[in-house]
Length: 559
Image 1 (spheres, rainbow, N blue to C red):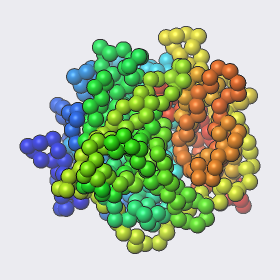
Image 2 (image 1 turned 30 degrees about the vertical axis):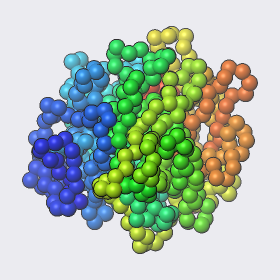
Image 3 (image 1 turned 90 degrees about the vertical axis):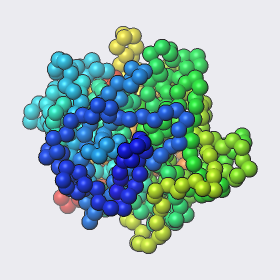
């Protein structure tokens, strides 16, 4: 599969011959030999109302996907600073497609110009990010141009050159090599990649630096998707223009779909092209930094069922020992920032006059952002509508291993309580905390000791409370967790799914604190230090993140 750019348009297409970059096949190209420079108009965006096109697909060979990325920036007509990961051919934020057990190699060159003064302070946290040379992975001091890559949702090691974000920074002009081994038992589904430098993560993600990472093989777990055309739909957010003040009818952030803006107040939706009554497999990523999405599909005002196949990269119902996934029918799907949903859609019949994919209004609390109802896309049907470039293959292989098998029935070795907390004593310097009950609240600092220390092989139940007047979105790196209960009440079996991000609703100001209880699985091979945080990145940048350390199991007990 080859991606190429039509010189007469801004559209991208797929070809089936070799992709040559800098005199070498892209899959083995090295950034360091290319002499890249930032293009004059990097990070392209599309006009409002356009048809959503699929991100380019990068596919490995012989179990290895090698990619050369540059990190680039520019300022758009509204004054928003854009960021993007770009290949040498100009492909922006391509979809990376791997299989369980594959090796993902990314060479990243940071072409964002160095700031006028250096070092910079962590913009949102109010602290200087300087890492001791002994623990630094890449640069030791952060600037406003620093970047790295987090492979969100993957159960990969938190070590230098893999999925480590506490000490990894790539500064302007530097080149950094990632070499990531996708676990052989990684659940097949939708993951994603984005920058994760504390203090500037919100700006980078709102700038658009994000893309999909797909672990292939979901058809083996739920054959209902076999043979269906696939749509990858990525929702991103960005600040409203400078002349608009959020509040009232103005949302805190505008959104886009596959880089097609849906600006307020007109909310002109993107278009999705389908054949009448066609079934498709939609893989939807909420790559927003701060905006909560509640997806709903309507035909002439009538809500349509969505057949859910996977959430946060894990096929629903697939870890109960039967190996097969279970489809769920939902009228709407709540997607926290960073959450993913994969579902089957049956398109509108030719007689339907108005088919729309929308987000419902989300009540984020008295201190939360305004996330209004708004259309995301109109579904346009045509007998000649082109098919998406990827079709899910037929089932032709063995069932994948279950990474989390038996967790629901496992005996929890430890119970913990954590809570979200905010301090607005200094209105111009709000402080956000995620704290283990009984410990003092601390703003995140990479030099902080781990707030939680556990041991490989443990199974722990965590109750996360929200003691604030706005929603928070709990996310942990390197792991998935099993959602058990909300507000102390066990969830129905169909709602006990494996996620990596879950919403904890706001506290109304009186009564018990809202809570979510999750089961953490430390039985796998992951050890070392990594983070958990609120995935509203404005909150994370203000300090709402902490470190957990997983010590290796004693040799006799190692899994």
